[in-house]
Image (cartoon, rainbow, N blue to C red; front, side):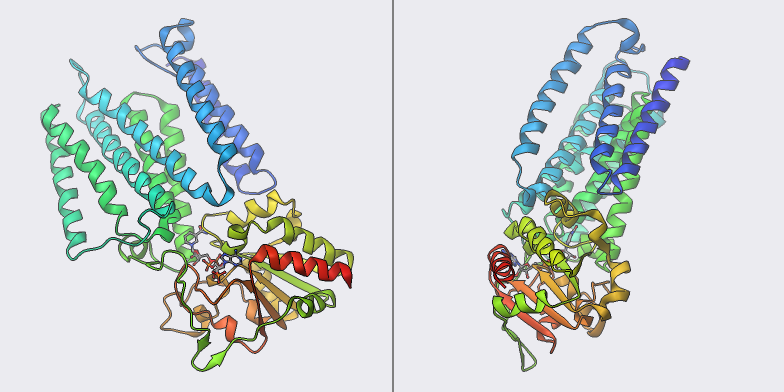
Length: 467
Ligand code: NAP
């Protein structure tokens, strides 16, 4: 490898790492995306290696034409998708993009593996088979995750002995992998392994509830990263090794952080068939052990807000569904004009994807310094006059603290119930993602403002302006 190529690879790796670092804050996330994309563009243009030599040193070739065609098709599809996708459908888009990445990694490895007259070491054969296996299961698993998020078959599909059957399929795949790595490319064995890996991706995701898909996608994303890294070894492209390892490790960390924020082990997500309610049981009796909820009218709620000194807004999935982020911003501004201190409490798994609330509030230009993380805001909740819960449910459920038998017991929550008054904006007594009653709604200091979040906020703003 020439020293120029080595320098380019280091430069590309640095761009990827800086990009990821910048993604850590909403303020710098856009720039982070651009920086990482610039790294990818440099890698695309300079580090393609078709015949032992890097293309950039050979001038314009057929490969460049192919790269240009592929890049253009990808750009058009990506731009149309990104501009047209609704904010609430973002997890589906991530699932699709991830699936395509996994599929591409599997195809690269398969084509390399079945190339005729190719002398490869056992190590390289193993990396190719690994990339084929992991990439194809990530592809089919992501497609199922996409369909589940689209509401096609949200409920977990389980049957007795399912985990044993999946284990057996995995064993057959591994057996075939060992055979292929040890005894060379056998087309039939390879195709069977490829198909079984595709099937395994489907079988792995089918038993998982629709609402757990963001965690599954994050896990599959880390699989795609590993497949790309293995591809990098297989075709001797160090930039792919670096990019794949970064995606693999960040996907794994994100999966673990999401599971920690939900207080559930990864095994519970993968094998627990949790969230069978599919993101919100429609029922909800509206009474918890004889206790009933206390509704509030918009004019009274506006009065409480207008005379408060400190207000904390807790946004949740319902705000995303109602697309009420602009009204939330308007309400916050209106309160600000009256000298009320407004802060936003952001739970790490509020909504249906990591950073969901940050993205929506950023879209509505809510200043970043008003956003507080759960750990920062909880110690201050006793001093808060009004906590306005907008379409959040599980992330403010005190059952996580009070009820040892609750499936969310131990999950860190935003302690809205400790505010002097809590006003909850939701349409009905329907449950949240976890499908359980929310103890907060029945507390003495809680009042329920029923209705679509956007409509309720518009009334609140009008009432405040009129008063
Ligand atoms: P949630 O518990 O799912 O509750 C959302 C609430 O929004 C529902 O109770 C619903 O009640 C209300 N709602 C829906 N549409 C509304 C509208 N138009 N107007 C007003 N309210 C509306 O949401 P969350 O508190 O944000 O909690 C997120 C849950 O998702 C957690 O359990 C978390 O573990 C899980 N999860 C999150 C992620 C992630 O990455 N963020 C990933 C996987 C799982 P009504 O129908 O009565 O209105």
